[in-house]
Image (cartoon, rainbow, N blue to C red; front, side, top):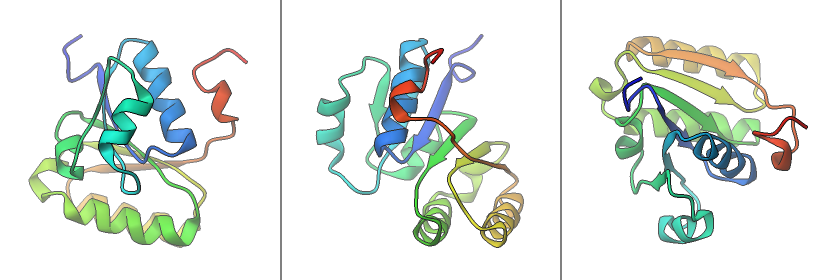
Length: 140
């Protein structure tokens, strides 16, 4: 398996995003992450995981992996923020990538984002997380 196949990009490092990053890192995957809310240096220190690299810009995180996971909460905020993050990344970087969106959202929001990802020659998969953050990556 090459490095790109073993890597994943996470966009959003709140409680659940950090749990997912930790789970992938613990399984030996390289994780490139981006977070919009906190200073990235603080997140690097807080996470202290050898396989997690917190990037300064969304484009930096997206270009490292063909598999991306968007971890954002609050449907209204997520829709607007997700779209602006997606649009901030150069179109060519999205080509042939798969974005998995773990969040609660309205059907119309996911449809709009699916059209956007299709226009970028990428795939969008919408789903939800039904787990407590501390159980992510465990058999609990």
